[in-house]
Length: 174
Image (cartoon, rainbow, N blue to C red):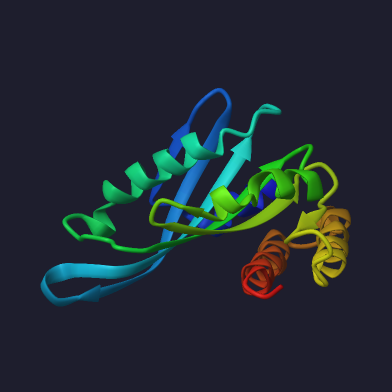
């Protein structure tokens, strides 16, 4: 159910499916300068991990390729990218967050990365170890998962989208 809601939330521009992972990207903001040069671009990325492997560098390189091929930025030079990663796994949690948010991965190439890890089995959300919003967001997600069958789909999706928006807002502050 979480994956379905995230797929609706993303309405992605580009995607990639491999046996180990699935990636969807959505460009949310690009600040263009003179002569169609962009100095900044913000991108939301949805990653569904299908195995225990975490090939972050490989995925990040694929995201950079997908962004460069995107119609929204075709012919535009991007000097900086902020990537908001929604990483989903049935084994996700704090440990997956810590494996992703290493010093080398937080800044990779021209990317500045923020991670949101979602356990698709139990609804646990991790914005980082000890993040003050982890508990509240996880409880809200679990409550929505429990009420899925008794709510109208549009209402349920709307509430899920609010949780995802809250994840984005709160991943910036820690």
